[in-house]
Image (cartoon, rainbow, N blue to C red; front, side, top):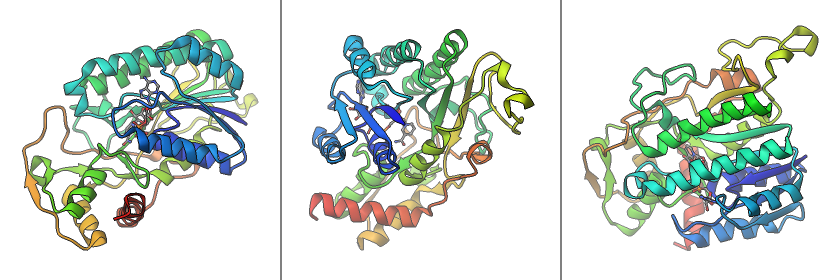
Length: 341
Ligand SMILES: NC(=O)c1ccc[n+]([C@@H]2O[C@H](COP(=O)([O-])OP(=O)(O)OC[C@H]3O[C@@H](n4cnc5c(N)ncnc54)[C@H](O)[C@@H]3O)[C@@H](O)[C@H]2O)c1
């Protein structure tokens, strides 16, 4: 299978590309190596992928529609996985326009590529942040996502709507995933685990929001990309194909659209963890206590996320399972090795 992955120099794209290459597929990566965080980390990820003979890449921006079209046309993908985005909840307060450019214009350009090339399946990243001010837990895909708290969440919600319209009009089967706080080796420097580990090792204070009363459904990156790999084969059927003659059986809690080959699926760990327990796991692994700076909840942030992953399990037979202490240990080992500390 030939897979076109946008965001291949990013945290999740890198891990997904690695998994698919290991499974014998060919991957063409597309990434603009933006300077939102340390570009050297992105270069290192791409360099590692380039060691594989079945990996090729284009380094360009999504907003450069001709470059994106040329790269995708040459790759002739069976499957497109769109992960490139301006990510980050907090940065969307500082630089909202970056989210409009990458997530709205960029995603539209990916949809146009899918319309032209008609891959077997288009899969795109949304986020648990779309649940916004909804406080019913755990978050199920059928719950309300009409109250985004940041422009980041609003652009991802818009991506869900845009992809639905394109799937309806142009018929490209599309799966949107809502990821829940992903962590692990080669992770993002703007995310809590990275910042906490650095702070603890350097003995500098770490910022703990909502005075530590935060809960997250931390999802280990290997589990996440395994779930994506399995969802690639769970192609949403068009409305006319949903008959026993097509081998189709209804699935409880499915989010299939009545009007398009489109669905949305949560990928989380189904187990919320208290942030302070997460910090203690890092301290135990590093062997040093953190200097805690307790702060109020930040604008746009939510105190808790917790995923209902029963649809993922029904579609793939799989659910993420790595215990957070094990995942934290793997991250800290990687961090120390990467930074030589
Ligand atoms: N990591 C998480 O916890 C998490 C949670 C929810 C959703 N997501 C979503 O998953 C996807 C991948 O996230 P990640 O954690 O790997 O982030 P990341 O920032 O590590 O990766 C994104 C990659 O996209 C590239 N990129 C950004 N804007 C671009 C543009 N305009 N043109 C071309 N390339 C561009 C960046 O250079 C980067 O390498 C994103 O869509 C993100 O919103 C991530």
